[in-house]
Length: 313
Image (cartoon, rainbow, N blue to C red; front, side, top):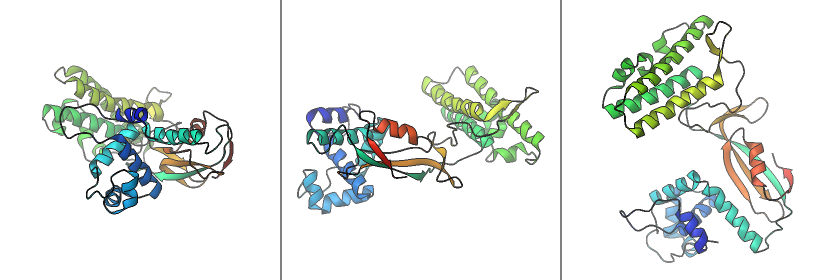
């Protein structure tokens, strides 16, 4: 499975460096990742298995080792690199390639079952007001860190003091049951967004990395505005009725989405999809996707062949 060509491909996850320890070959890390997923165990348990279980040692070619060939931190970093570059799916695709070569199943016909289950996200889900405020606070925090100033001072310079408060809605001090007051709050927050954008343009002393990071958060603010805000008849901003398609619900995790377990039960996060070959028992595709992506997952899973699929959920 891990021939020289595939190991070179996996080796592109990390950048070359002349410092630090000698690199760990990608093959044992990838094998450990596959075994970990198959057994459903933690990172600590992977290291324990490598030190205590000769079966693991045999598979990873470290028989009778007294210490695991890599640390927990290395395993975590490798897995993060896999996911960042989409190589987690590449590992699955590679197993399919090997199965084709070994004639494990026919590449032209697959009888499969697709199962989907909810996976709750860990990041905070917020309403439109707090999403906008959160994005602005993150942007101002980056500027404050660069200039070595207090957040409150930077917010005051931008005339966006409400963003520096621990509670945006408390800082606005409005009657949140009053529709007029809520519209006023939305206008105030959007004005703060414009003022922070103006502050970034005026600050010529910010380095490129800081400006890029700040603009990323400001762009998120504009994304929230585009999906949740529309213009009223009098030209003032108002909240859009209904939920926008692919609506962002969290600042910290941009991939989380609203989803449904059923007509009456909702959740926020992802959907876990597993495609299983009903004849061989193999799982040619699996992954976690934003909760609205089940259809696109099915399409990507079978780009190369038209299987006869029996839905499991």
